[in-house]
Length: 397
Image (cartoon, rainbow, N blue to C red):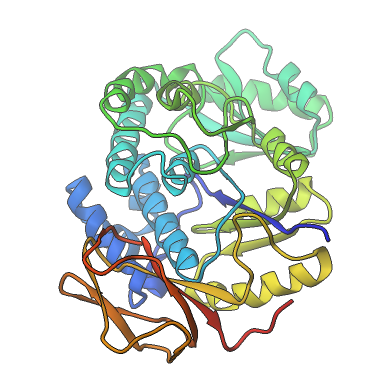
């Protein structure tokens, strides 16, 4: 049967919105916010709950808040046992993808993103620039429109008929006029604080390199398709790729085609907004394409994947069947199984199956305990799988 291969994608700057964390504040994954605030030395909860659109538009705020919310959504999806075959992220989202792949720890990811946002905002203040979306024009003609005597470049190759250009505001207007003369349907200004993914970001690249060089980076536990070359990587010069990303265009359209060619049949966008979901719809025909932005989306995800399995086969490889769910650690500490909990036992929603340090480990769903994935007395980390169930509420596809 045909495999259902899941690709997790993560959004970049521009997907943020005021109050985007409100739906998550009572979810167990909200604990990641306190960890982020400690790692960044900033009030991340304020950004997710109280910051207005103008405050969130600042690069230092939009990047950090978007990354943290993407990690909250990822944690929630992992708690129900869904794992990807492939990972990719758009611009800032590449940091989310690398965190999901285990290349960097969550706290290191927070610190990297915080520094990236500060560096890019400083670069934008040093050399003011802006961006615009060119709609309805082939990539090569957008390239042609940017060949003017001025500072303007292609920043994102997003989807068919959707390319973002960036540079000096006056030169951008000139290139936009040229694009319309070449047949563009629209040229839409984007309200951002700089000309990202262009040479204007060279100071940010140089500043970020120091932090990247000091960050521990490991091989990825599954392929990550990167912005620079749209190729899958598991062991790479991550620091070099992330540094180069700042001053080079995001090859997102090529990335989507590469994911499709690698066998991805389900694209899940994890984080605020549905920008990437729209790009997949424009680029890849026939794929199951879902945006996961709220706990409600997570609640229906297993059923959605079950439907995808019925139409395209069952998930294999590293993916769990849609009826199997993981219980993960709520914190870092020593795992102690609950007395009297044994393999094969029925588990109720909210039932305690053990503890990690002073934190109870409770099941977010009901089912039959299939096994423990951690030993008594083993030191575990936040979100590490501890047990797995066969859910009682969803039938096999």
